[in-house]
Image 1 (cartoon, rainbow over the protein chains, first blue to last red):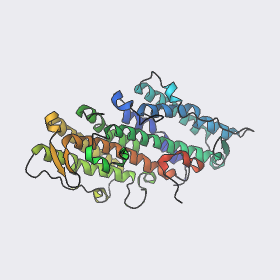
Image 2: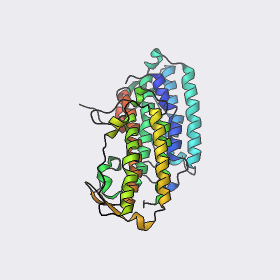
Image 3: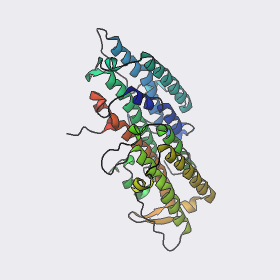
Image 4: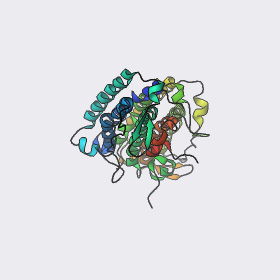
Length: 177
Length: 177
């Protein structure tokens, strides 16, 4: 599917509600386990999205739109949430994510970007030249990837409990030998 | 994590709201594409869950709880939704899923199953003996698997649009050669 800003916004604006439906009110038995070292719990997924609202999408879009001499993005810290979410509750993170996302979409809509702006480039520190269009498409796919990852880490709490059904449930991953 | 009915219900009762948050109001551009032959679109995922509410979880739990001479489950048709959802809208499917799930959880709660019932067995046509506990754990993991699958099929609409970011987004799958 071709990127269209209106289609992208339809996903971006609903992600906080999706996380709220998936996680609000769940006890830590569900939200705190992860899938092993350097993997994300449901709680970590939410913190990671919050860090992206502050440090990734809109700051990078600003760099692209400014078209200054240095268009190189700051590297993004994929593990910042281990520090930033400390001591916070899922409920607080859901509120924070909803607030930040709403403000960021107001900013994005305010820019009224068209085809010309969508084609402008910035420089990713590892991937090289990327367009605003690609950045915004990535924001959408990244949201959905973390919805999928959050559902997966929850499902995996029942990896053993499902017994022989495990082989019918690819979301649980292959049995470890 | 050990299976506990109260924990399982926390997920089962929220899945309709998760699908509503993820899909309500999205145009067919998002909800109708699938990932290739015999794969599910977002619309198909929802129809598949509806068929499960009618034909899988509660009917199989009844067979287990009855402990009759024939405890063998009917095979489940994984593709029934291609037929059953025809001509329906996402909005209608969301309502139908919510209604069926609520009724099924009322039924499940009404049984007041305890440790004795959770250990009772039925016979899966392919997997052999399975317990009520495993069936209910599978219901939960299956819900979450389809949340993940639905998010994935949506994300994959931007497989090309993300450009070089694709290698950072495992939800998009490996590039085809």
